[in-house]
Length: 258
Image (tube, rainbow, N blue to C red; front, side, top):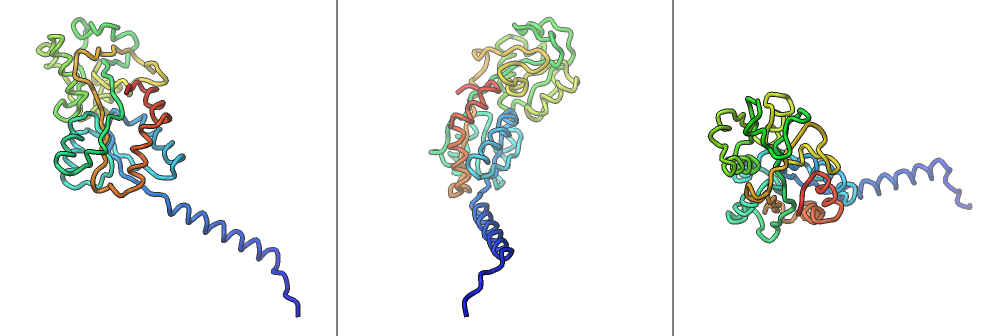
């Protein structure tokens, strides 16, 4: 007796099952990496992570905060795979303490410090508002935890303004909180990262003075692969991606250099 051809509906079901199984297999290849990201790098890293996921199929699970706090968490076993610090010293320290791979460490970006106010015209192009402005509060990130806060204090020292400015400082835990103090009006101005107020190559709102690099130590921001993730393909793929043209174009749009 001749074999009968399976009904068309059964063939369709089999094809659908095959498609689902194939999709599941592809999805199973996706690997995630937990990434500790310096607060100043929040906006560009969210864009980079989205592009990375689309281009590589891997996921970067992002946490944002102060570099100093991330260091303490990593020392105590926090399950991060990659650290994108706001400085170069912290990744160096992590490598020297055996928590990260020295061979993986590199400068992924160089940041810029700005004096910023949400009010247009409030901050002049030379930063003279620090000396002559009618402001009562200035926001600065904790210099012990946040490299941008340390750079702000170095700037005040170079300008001879530490004594006059310090009594009016509102201290942020990190550069993200410092930005919020200014954006909310709790401080008339503050030292923040250029990336927080810049979009597509210009200051998005308010007024700002880009602090000359000679007034503070370079804001070199290093990345490092933590030893706990040395066999995680997503971790290495992300570090490679940060060196690529697409990621660098995003960083440049937020004012970073290399």
